[in-house]
Length: 113
Length: 117
Image 1 (cartoon, rainbow over the protein chains, first blue to last red):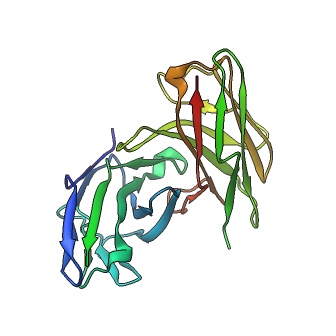
Image 2 (image 1 turned 180 degrees about the horizontal axis):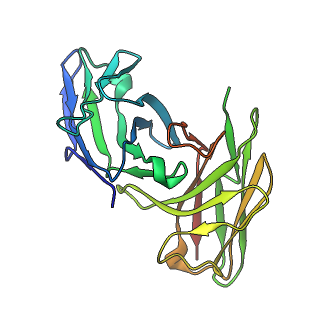
């Protein structure tokens, strides 16, 4: 079956530090990959996505590249802000599952001023 | 665009009562809606997939008689927790997709926190 493995948290960084949150996946087909973010007390919202190999998704300074050879979709940001503090979920959606997504366990990021 | 609302955002009920949670896509038609359950500091657990006009598809281990899902229109799905018990207390989140394709983004509601006393 499909699975998503995320870097364990929590992650604590100082403002303006570089962020990497690792995400690897296993899938039976050729999935689309997503990063969702959940701010405290809120639902999830899409941060970025990529639908084919070598695609780079980007939004709000965050980037992730779909690496088929390493089955990875690592999230990066060059300079984090306090407002980036949230839980980040990596997810995949497989062609055979009619839009259902498989989520990683989430990584909690805390950015300190 | 692509806003999903949930109502109520908070509900406290007595054990044995039923609770209905609504999920609405406000500015688009949702072919598919998903219902998740999220435990504290844990990931989302998919409960069921709901398609307009057809019966919901439940994930393994989810009691369909306990968690009734209705997707009456392209903008509304409801989850009813029947005869709720304290172990049903959780954060319930819905999401909606425009299409039933694997490339489609899911748009999430803000969640409903249920506390069963």
